[in-house]
Each structure stands twice: as C-alpha cells, then as structure tokens.
Image 1 (cartoon, rainbow, N blue to C red):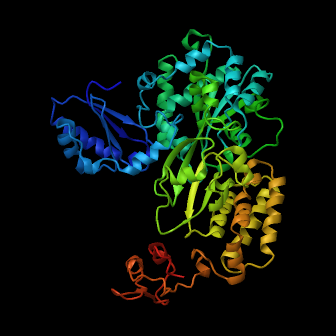
Image 2: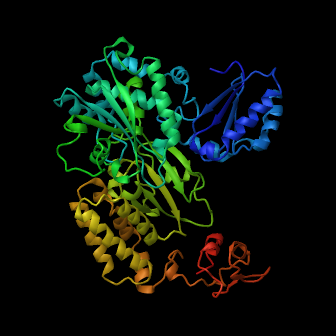
Image 3: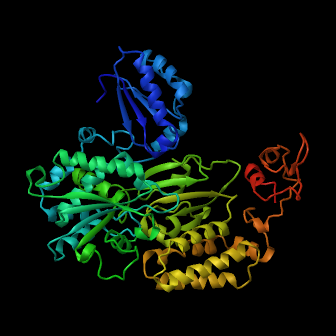
Amino acid sequence: MPPTEPLILICQGTSGLSAGADEVVQVLEQELGKHPDVKYKLKRVGDRGLFKDPLLDIVMPDGSRTTYEKVSPDRIPAIVEQHLIGGNPIEELVASEDYTNFFSGQERIVLKNCGEIDPEDIQDYIHAGGFSALRKALNMSPEQVIDEVKNSGIRGRGGAGFPAGVKWGFAKKAAGDKKYLICNADEGDPGAFMDRSVLEGDPFSVIEGMLIAGYAIGASEGIVYVRAEYPLAITRILKAIEQCKEAGYLGENILDSGFSFDIRIKEGAGAFVCGEETALLASIEGERGMPRPRPPFPANKGLWGCPTIINNVETLANIPHIINNGADWYKAIGTDKSTGTKVFALAGRVKNTGLVEVPMGTTLRDVIFGPGGGMAKKRLSFKAVQIGGPSGGCLPESLLDTSIDYESITETGAIMGSGGLVVMDESSCMVDIARFFLNFTVKESCGKCVPCRAGLKKMLDILERIAQGEGTSGDLEKLQRLSLAIKDTALCGLGNTAPNPILTTLKYFRDEYEAHINEKTCPASVCLDLIKFEVDEETCTMCGKCYKACPSEAVIWEKKQKAKIDLDKCIKCRACIAACDYRAIN
C-alpha cells in the first residue's frame, strides 16, 4: 500500500553504517529541518544485501520508488530539493543496472523484510504480517505444527542439512520435563555474514520461528547463541526480545494460549568449533567449547541433559513463512529433496558482492553470473568457487552448472555448509587457498582428538613446504591419505570436513600442486618464494599500472616503454602483480 506521504528508507545494518549511513541520516534530517512544511516518514532499515551502501530509497505517495546507491552526505541537499520537494529523481545518482540485476534473479523469503522494515520496531514487523504464523500455530496442535514442517521438506540450513521437522519430532517424543530451543547464530566461516544480516535486519522473524519451534517440541526456554563480534545484531535482537515481552509475544501465557516461552542471549567468544552442536552446548553450560561423542544426540540429551533442538538463524527465519503459506507452497520451491531457498554470502572476485537468496536447484553459474554479475575484473577469467566455508570445497569452471542442492554439492566433494560462496579468478593460487583454509581450521581446532589436533597440523606443514618450493613427489599422496584418514576418524564435524579444501583442490587443480613441486613455480604468482618478479615483455602493455602501484620504486617505467623491475629495491609485496590486469609479471 503506497504511503500517504513520502517514505524514506535508509539501510543501517553493519554494511550501511560502515559506509557512513549515520552521517547521511544526520544531514538528511538537517536538510529536511529547513523545510518544516514538507511531510515525510523516515525509516531506518537493515541492510538489503548488496554492498553498494549507503542505500537510500524514496517511496512517493503515488507508489513510485527510487533507490539511490553509494549516497554521500554532500548529495543529500540535492536529493531533498530536487526529489522530495520537486518530485524529480536525480537520474545520475539512481542505483545502477547492477542493482536491478542483483535482485531480479532472487526469490527472497528469509530476506524478504531485510531492508524493508525497521528492525527495532515491532509494529512495523506486525504491519508486514509478523506473528500471524505464531497465532496460526497456537491454534494447531504441536504435532500438527511438526507435521507441517516435516511435510515442507525443509532441511537445516546450518550445514548438515538434516530435516528440521524430523529433528523436532525426536525432541517432542523425548522424555523430560524441561526442554530447550537454541538458535545457533555462531557464524564463524570466513566470508559468511548471513546470520548477522538477518538478525540485524529482521530479528522478529527469528524470534517468531523460535516461538513456533518451542511450542512444537514443548520447550519453555529459548537461547540465542551469538558471537560477541556481532554487537549490532546483539543490540537489535535484545531490543526485539524486550518489545516482544511488552507486547505479550514472550513470557507467560502467550496470546492467552497457555503456552509460555522466554528467550535469552548467550554471547560466544568466537570459537569456530562452537558452531558444532555439542561444543555449543558445552559453551552455554560454562565449559570449554569442545565436542562430545554422539549418541546421545542433543534432541534426546542436550543442554544440561535435557532434550534440546538447535537450529540456525536461517532455518528458524523460514518457519513463519512455512506455517503461514503451508508445506505445499514451500515444497513447490526448490527440488524434490532440497526444498525452499538458500541464502548465500557471495564474496571474492565477483562484481556484485552481498547476500543472495535463490531457490534450491539454481546452478552455481546462475548465482555467480546472475546476481553476482560475473567476474570483478573482466580480463581475469573465473577459476574456482569455494562453497561451504573452510569445511567446504573448491570447485572448478567445469562444475559451474552443478545444481545447488545437498546431494549434488556433496557429489562434487564439497558441502553446502551454512552458505558461503567465495569466487576466485585466475590470479588465485589453489595451493595458497587450500593452505589458507587449513590454517584456519588448525587454529580453530579444539585439540580434543588426535586426528584433528595432529593430523591437520601435519597436513599444513606439507602445504607450507609445497608453497615454499620444497615439496617432494610423495607429498600429494601423503595429503590424500591423511585427508581420508582424518575424515573417517575425527570426533566432530569440524575435523570430518576440514580436509575438504585439500581433497577438492587435489582433485580439480592437481596441475597447480605439481607445478609447485616439479617446476618450483606458482602459476598464479601468489606464493612469494616461487615468484621471480620479472616483467614478461611480450605480455606487457606499457600501461604503467605496476609503476604507480609499487611502494618501493622498484618498477622502472616510462610512457610507451616496457616496465622493468629492480630486484635490489623489490620488497616482494605483490602490489605490481595485483595492479597488472594482463598478468605480465612472473
């Protein structure tokens, strides 16, 4: 329904605020203060997902909507005068075609309200249909709610992909007077920001999902386990909890239904291993976050020995939509075995970075070259995409048409994970990428089991030697054997999946490993010990970019002349390599 007066939306999630959205709002209010006769409504919303912040929308009473991207404070006076007062959008400031293309290929369910509602105003959420699913669920029996979730086919979006309704059913049947519902917002994958964005942009949907899940399994207490590095997300979820209590959606006898439920926050210290269910439980109980053997599974014996369900943010944010629209509606989206949509954090060397939500069954190519817009540098071709974070795998161009569903991704040797997609071009070294992710899991290992504690460190040592040009002919077989042994014997999911980046790069990019070992060269010019820092005269275009980028004046260049490098001055910072679009530096 169009507003009766101009509506101004400004994205103020972490991305928006880091880009200066607060200052934009201050200047906007100052400028509008000069025109007391101008009626308007200003709404602070969460980030919409595309990193072209600050984003500012103006919705006029006639329903017309204009989005401005990368808005700087100095642009505000013109926007106020020409658009808000004059009614004429400033075309040169309007969001580019990339903005339109980014959202046109998506189907937003979880992200539907992000960038549209005020995350700190419960009335705005209710106006958008919020809590109607809770009211509907409270008029159903717990068993009916569980059946609806089961029939929808939704699988946990935290990584393993276990059917959510089946898990709920286990907890419902488990013996125990006290049961718990935990929202796992401990998002630790490098490059992942899905949970943070949802909590910042639409915290009420997560709370509503928790309420429905708690009602279904018979829990009276919910806990949001969120890493302390997410201060804005924590602030907004806490405000949302308080407003829900004041409005009667949390506490005793919710909506006169006889159902009582409360939620509290537990801030995690940022340990990656605490994303694993049993380590998370140990952390909440005040112990060191270390995994426990399973069975028993948390649904039967979890927090303080009580039946416990752990779902991540994305899973719970889907639940209100499933209850409102029905299982058949949800099943019609995606594939037979992987229903619904999936949210991805698209990052790396791709033109448009941000949050993308697409139906399951969409191909990797459709995401990267659709909403993603293709490669950031057109002269550099696509090389690989890392899916599933440090526990996932690197897939080559030949697998770009792989369907995004649990079975298809697993067949490649990668995993769906929580939803990280890191795109790499031909300037990326796959040995270095494997080393980066393995270094991360080595540091984040809790050290409880030998395969993870000792095995991953041994693999990292081998990768370090290969990257330094000291690899031997037997190293690749050692990496393969160690990877398979660790996958089979590690205690928890972190150890079981940590070798995936090694196995997939060995499978799809073995030639790069062999070049490092046999030829003592890094084809991507990344591994410093193997770079000669010489200009290839046949490839050099005499553009001078390397000369301008060099901080140590080691590049010798004049107009219409080939560049040269003074090795005595060269500090091997790789600035020249990064600046050269033609890969003319070896």
